[in-house]
Length: 391
Ligand SMILES: C[S@@+](CC[C@H](N)C(=O)[O-])C[C@H]1O[C@@H](n2cnc3c(N)ncnc32)[C@H](O)[C@@H]1O
Image (cartoon, rainbow, N blue to C red; front, side, top):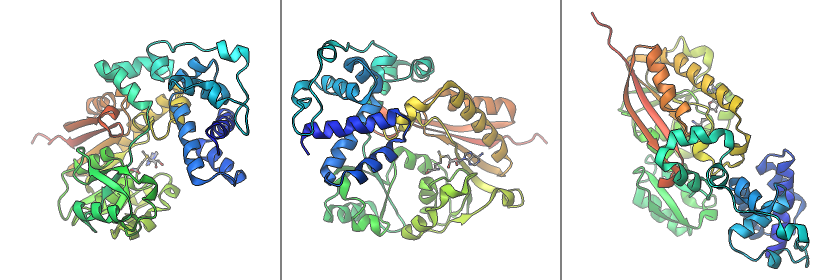
């Protein structure tokens, strides 16, 4: 496909997403009906679509509208490229710009529009990030790096690195966590690599790994991953020597791939239903990786930035508070409740924890945040423990 034809395909897909289709689904459906597109075309089109979703507001300002065509005009203008070169009307390229399109468009307003953050969220975003607001908004406008977690059950970091290198995947250590490798070349070869197929490495953001690495785990501990979901953190927990890991999720279907992933990683996980939790022995550590806005991972899932609403955020905050209260009963007397989000918003992080500490007789042992501008997803974690009862 020519560069112009790839832009035309991105326009088509963006219009489907604008009409309500989930981004991944729209891309898959387009690929199925466009067998002529090779893997490089599909990758380039995907990049166009995701770039436009990350920068939807600023591209819409520059392009003069929110439909796929004008978003791509805005994208080219933002990149300083010649729009006419791509919108040539030749072959399968988009039609040349009409006079009205050529003169439409303006520079994005500073603040929420230039930062590609919804207006309603901007005050909370600024409040949460202070002097770093613009840096973090800017970081969210760009593609996320690919990180791998070395599975210490099967390999050490140098071995995993050289196994990846044999299959053309080049990596370097990531400072956020000792098990984290950042992929610097060959990311599209990961799935077919021996290191991945044999469970030496897993795809996982470095900050997500660091949330688990921050836990004071020791052999013999019982650890409950209460919001296990796809199991990224469950597998990282289970890779720690001598720790017994239990996985639970309110939506058990979300854990459907976990047994296969655990088998590949060579780790044991026990699945536990909500109905069994009250009768189970208390846990030394309960990790609650709660549902959240996902604001820290908007680079990977940019549609979420525009789907979040004040009502949805308020519901999430309520659910987080309920999970904190519910799970506190599963923690052993001297145990740890570890709260985590992939969010950079105070309302889901520090403020949520302070609300819990006001309600219950618990203390904060550790609080840590990771920001997107430092090269990881945005994450937050807080470790909580019960206060001793006075005799
Ligand atoms: C952020 S995701 C977890 C991601 C996962 N820990 C990982 O590292 O891949 C949050 C999970 O919480 C689950 N969840 C939502 N409400 C819940 C509740 N009340 N109790 C337990 N899990 C819940 C969701 O189904 C979702 O899978």
